[in-house]
Image (cartoon, rainbow, N blue to C red):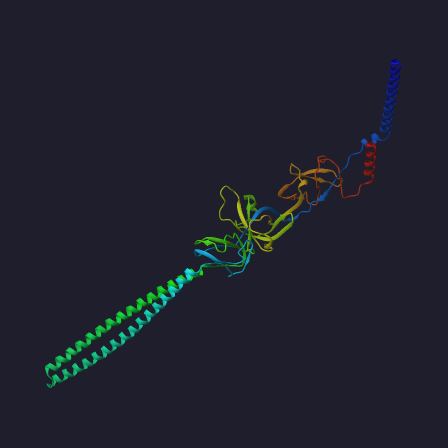
Length: 441
């Protein structure tokens, strides 16, 4: 039984082997027949590759420098306490993001001590005014006394003159003359005393005026200290960094909040020396160039127009480039200080240049130019700028109007024939493609 089973198995393997050999021979026969009929003709045809071609049109190209920056506020105000004490009033707008208007009362510190000091200074000012009025009245009285003493002196002198006249005529006595002279001397002494009193009264007026001036200075200081108990908004803006709490105690010059003007923003942009040099004029000044500030996020793309404003006066420690500032002109409400944004700066235009895809330029700095038959030749080009997926190249006379390969592939090179992907396929190339497809099948 075992012998019979082994014999049948050997016969089955023998027939299977002959069947596989027959199939292999049949496949070889078909392959030789196909090679004899069309294989040689297919090998004699040149392979044409399909590539996207574009025409190089020289002209004025404006490069766009793409850099990154940080939004900052051009106008910022720190709210600091001008007096120490307890906060008795806090405006509802004193919260993060609160909108305030110019002159709005935001914080009031307990003004009782400052009010008492102001009342004392008002009383001191009134006392100084009263003292000045008394001194001015004393001056008037002293002036009148001096005038009366001067009139009396004149009368005494007139009487002495009459006595001297009578003595010359031999009518008067020496005793009368001496009495008149003593009266004149007494009147002159009274005039001197009156002048001294007037001078003292005038000095008192000067002292009273100085005292009034000092009282008014103290009064102004008291009013300023009372005004310092109220903190108002210097301009319209938004509140941030709020630390003030109603009922809390604050010290002198303690920062309570900060106001930012949302309509006055700028972007701080760090640049390399090469990038900075492109934005300068011939005399080394920063050009007034337009820019676009872009804030990308999951919600969308927010843009704002800007313009280059100035360059930083110093270089940050450890850096070798330059920092420029771009003033935001419009739509600043969508941006906030601290936003990290991208900035697109429009550089001066470059003449006789063309904007090409970066894939069109090879590693050797050349492009593939197709002639009228589609044959490729390599031509070196000078890359002036790289921006995104494009490059700006200088267009020589030989490259103007030429068709180049937009996207280089490994199989493309000098001497290879290509066909424009946008052009219709010629009939002979279509037949060659069909024949190749059948052969591969």
